[in-house]
Image 1 (cartoon, rainbow, N blue to C red):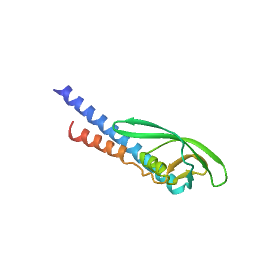
Image 2: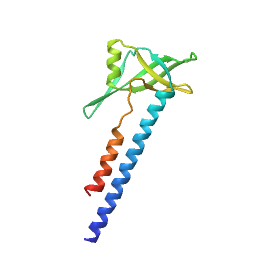
Image 3: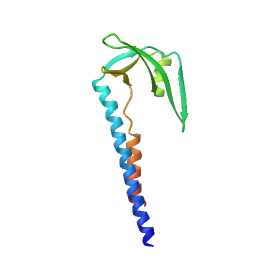
Image 4: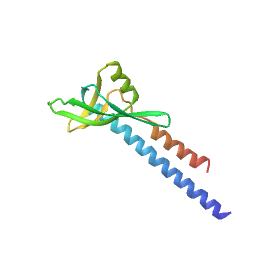
Length: 134
């Protein structure tokens, strides 16, 4: 009986720790995307000619090579993943704007991209589950 109780406490602690790790990484990801969008320079990328699609768990992620010219005239080519909404913009012929970091133009996010809450929500669910269910 005592061993069972100790095992339960260990699982609670592990669940809380894993939940906290997810929450921290989730907020870090959100902060990085928001920071690039706030401090980055904006430019429209050239239309893409081809892309690769990765399907997993009912959702798709796309990867393509993007070309753009920085504010100071540097030509940049960078392989980057992008969401389905950006693909829809390319297919409809809409200009796709990015925000890039002037000191590292290959680090960019799409202007329409929103920082996801996914990791934070998973972490919170794990934390709550560890505290309540175990």
